[in-house]
Amino acid sequence: MALTLSNKAKAVKPSSTLAITAKAKELKAQGLDVVGFGAGEPDFNTPDNICDAAIDAIHSGFTKYTPASGINELKQAICDKFKRFNGLDYKPSQIVISNGGKHSLTNVFSAILNPGDEVIIPAPYWLSYPEIVKLSDGVPVFVKADKASGYKVTAEQLQTATTEKTKALVLNTPNNPTGMIYTEEELRAIADYAVKNDIYVVADEMYENLVYNGKKHVSIASFNDEIYKRTITVSGLAKSYAMTGWRIGYTGSSEEIAKLMSSVQSHQTSNPNSIAQKAAVEALNGDQSTVAKMTQAFDERRKFMVKRLSTIPHISFVEPDGAFYVFIDVHEALELSYKGKKIGDIAEFARILIEEYQVAVIPCADFGFPDHIRLSYAISIEQIEKGLDRIDSFLKELK
Picture 1 (cartoon, one colour):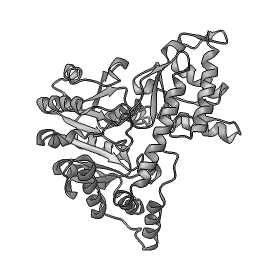
Picture 2 (cartoon, one colour):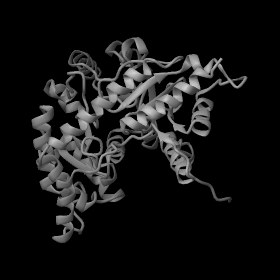
Picture 3 (spheres, rainbow, N blue to C red):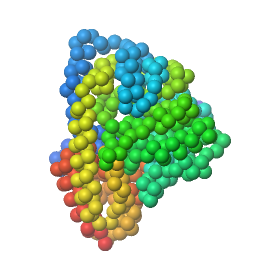
Picture 4 (spheres, helix red, strand yellow):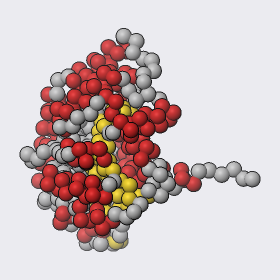
């Protein structure tokens, strides 16, 4: 019998965001002046107090295995943060610390899904959600929002997509790729929907600190006991503390789900990095002023980008309130021609930009919107200005 490979693994799409980022790095290595708008990570260094805590952990010999789901010191710091920031009461036994947000989501779906269970994913969505669901034998069901609604779905839309196989809803606020934030009123309606249909809510709140325009981040699990017990709250330190490479994500859930996730993790990866866990304790318990400074810098970049984008032809967008992305509708540009040839699709649009204008953008077909791009403002204002000038030049060439 011929050797075969996993059909499940072969069905997984590679990350287009990582592919674009790799292409940009390759061109930079060749000496080209590439502006990369693909970054899903802050361009700031991890704050010194967090780095110092990691160095102290190394010097003190904290380099051995820890409990698979993380050390109690960090679990308590996460509980304190949940209470302080999110208005959520979790005990350390309800916390599972993992190797980043993707790992946390993998644990969640491994714990709650059986083959054929459906997971509702509002579109636009972070491209990894459907892939992680499928790897856990679930079935992604997409509910598409539109620009008029600020790219947010309603409880009524969710209800229409709900079947007897619906097991969970993924709710991401602040949102990647749109930067939009669900209001408390919108979240209460969605919470009522989830309780009525007795489904889980996987609340991805990774960008919870990055909120602008006087908006407020609200955790859906904070409303009442019924939605609390159905919600798995997912977050991490990557975006808020400039710790993408440290790989620390975490969840708050019922003790039953936490126990299942801990068991899965104990066999798949064991504990998250011991040194990064000590650094995470300092991040959550230590001086928070650097978080405020980074958020302020992102807001200044956001305002600059929004103002400049508003002068560029053939595009439209909704001003984001959170995260560090602008989600841009380029459908008009796709119908136009460049050097006598119709652009036609988003892949060609992105190819022209990176190869001829040295600008890397994220085409959003894998986010559920094949006529949009995502631009990150997790880069300097100087880079933003240079990149947007190039995009402007490109779009003005279209006929």
